[in-house]
Amino acid sequence: MKGPAMTLMVIVQVTVICITGYFFYRVLTTKPKPEPDSYSENDEEPR
Image 1 (tube, one colour):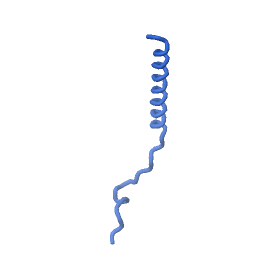
Image 2 (cartoon, rainbow, N blue to C red):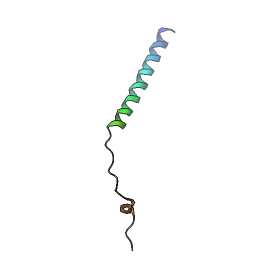
Image 3 (cartoon, helix red, strand yellow):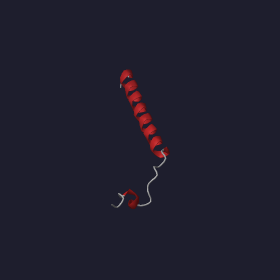
Image 4 (tube, rainbow, N blue to C red):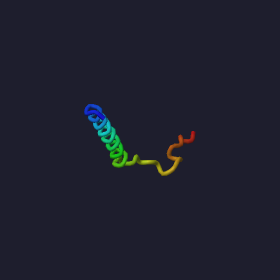
């Protein structure tokens, strides 16, 4: 493999690894949204 091809391959692989790592970090450090305890809280009020 020639020099420019090897350089491009390394740059692309490093970029993909960095983007993947960033999104894994975001998923693992995101705080969970508060969820209601039951579905009854989502129901409309009776008329």
